[in-house]
Length: 429
Image (cartoon, rainbow, N blue to C red; front, side):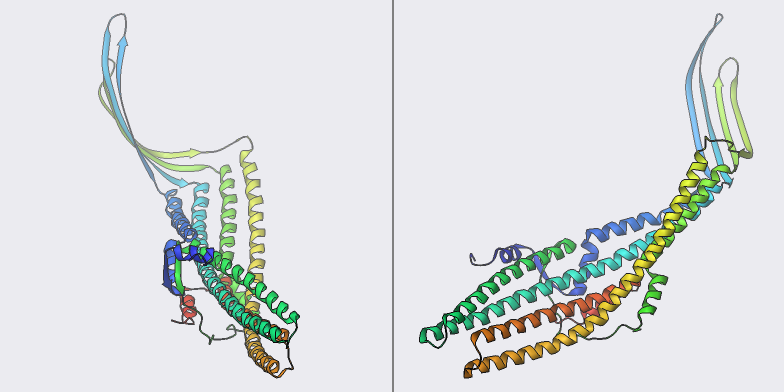
């Protein structure tokens, strides 16, 4: 156990379980703190609608009082109780500010829904990225180990050949240098695997013991439709990021109207019912009062605060308009980047698959050449290095291609759980 790397020991000591991408995603929906925070924010945002509606509905208040009184006069000293209650109702008839707040509440609900949609799609991308980062790190560890073993064989061969005098000491030194370098790369790969596992743990709260790996046959398809312009148009129409900015602009617009309402009169329907009683020598018995009427308030001057707030709201509205324009441009840029990531990634995977075949053939030919004396040990080491580099690049390109597909759908707001299930079907058992 002492010979095991510290990163591997830490991994073995952690609670672990086996899972595929869909299982990891389902766990993340329950365990990820960022997603839980977004869900709570969404639930809070839904309450804006009843709060806005409440401003247009009547309010009813009940007040009651009781007091002990003592009156001293030159002729008498009297003590008595005074009791009473009052029930009042206020129904807004015209309050421009309340109408604006009600419209704001609708936009706030829309904004909360769009923000939660962003969080849900972000969770899918983050989970997939963390999942495939772990697989890539595992691939790198395996490739580094295999490369180290292959170079070790070449090192032993170089040592034997040097002992019998068929090669120079240079071949041995070259093989030893490659072996030492690969050992260092293997340690770095193991450390990177530990880091990637911890990144996945940050989302799940635990580390899977095994992750289902990607099948050798990965479906390589172009985006549908294969037209970047149409994807950008779709992003402008249904991207939740843009929906958030649109809602923010509408909220800012209604904020202007709300502040302008400070100049408008308010009209309320008011009604009241109350009783009061006391046993003083002036008044004795119970008095009942009932009132119904309209109450008008007309603001005349508030020290210029209303005008200032209107100017502030207009400036914030302009900011929201510019934020929306920036959001449109960013959404278009992200969509184009993701589209190119899919198309170029597909071409890169195909090219690296062919490069892997060529590198394997080159290594086989170089080894044969070494056996017949026309190639050196250094040539074999170079061919091995080329082969493992091609394997590493191909592995990374395959994962990047999948992530680009998810990011493209996320950019246009169409990323769903079904897309996770589709990717999950590309994994082995």
